[in-house]
Image 1 (cartoon, rainbow, N blue to C red):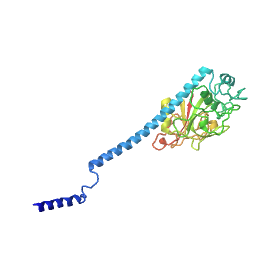
Image 2: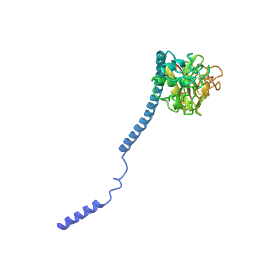
Image 3: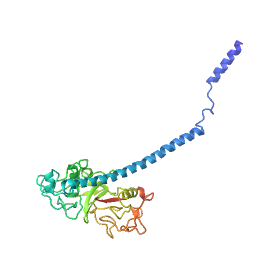
Image 4: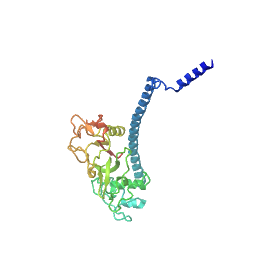
Length: 306
């Protein structure tokens, strides 16, 4: 009996030391694989949805900036009886705001240097070059504590010239990203904001990046639709897909002038806008919201002061 018992114990010990079967070591079951695939799908879907939510938030934030700046402009006009940047230099000096012309203590002003004519002129009548009143506008809004930041702190008070410090030193960055900044200017009796990618600044102007178009057609359409009529050639929000020289960026939209101030008379179908005729001034044009052009930064936006 003892011998038999000892044999059974040895057999059991031997079995316990043997490797487990290959079948038991096999991979996941179909149920387990299905669960893993479902989890992966949820993660991928969450990432894509998250990207859409981020884009939507950027567009909302950019629209909020436009409305904030309009509100700040109106508050400034009510408080100081003039438009920021264009406010008479003598008035600005009296209120302790940054002013132009003469010196920092005299501020004699003059055309494009705070002349009170209601237009943001670039140190010369009728121009929108980023020197003089256009960059001064942002500085005076900061002086009046109506917008945050320190833009324009190094503006030259005699001429309203900028420096090579870069666009972030003179213009508010747009929430849309991609190097977009808010700049301003006047044309044909109206003042405008311009939303575009700016790379450098100099004593006489601001220079666009190699690809100045900073908004995709889908983004431009959404901004236009929420603020205006959703059409690129009409209303207070207008868009172009061609490069625009900074000193003419507020130019009138006329026949033979695709860009608001320069460029070809037609817009390519892969650019910011399309229509049956591709004529830039056609009121039937719409934003190129296709899967390819619609998601590429092909648009510059011009928004009229409200």
